Length: 220
Image 1 (cartoon, rainbow, N blue to C red):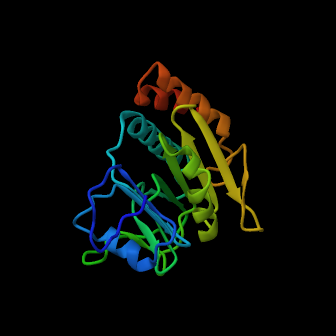
Image 2: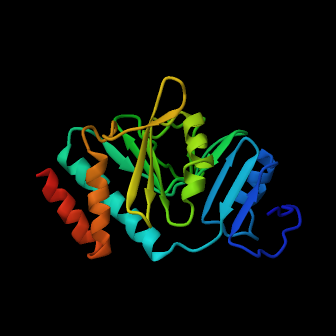
Image 3: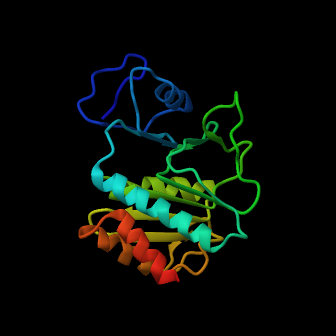
């Protein structure tokens, strides 16, 4: 569907999408008081935004993966980790995104200072080491347009968490600039992707905090 950003029309769907957008279109939507977007992306003329609310499945899976990040960090205290899930990132004129999962590893992690924009600005902040999307209703988009966006930025590792299938599609960036599937995380070094999937499967019968506790025991 196409919405004229200069004169917003009533939404008939929570999803907005354009394939002929400009950076100025993105800025108009990003800063609009008319549209209350929850997620937004821009790349090569593709402008996408989700104005819908976060569902129970999406929220529960997202919090579980974030808990896993914290548990992994607790087991590797000598390595700095910082989670910035759902924080807007942009690279002027070319890229914008707000991944559900954003993980920095190592040194030179962005820090917000009073008076600065409330986003990660990739002209002055380095790229995150890992990003991911929680795919409740957006699996095809996250494995296509979003995947190409993150690869073109040069982000080393990308996860797509399939809520309905309790699956994890994990990719590592190759020298070719394309993502290839991996079975073991390279950023959370040595973490089997199958262990993530086994943890997600437990959400069918138990809480995400219980699933996180089970995950922690597997690493002990």
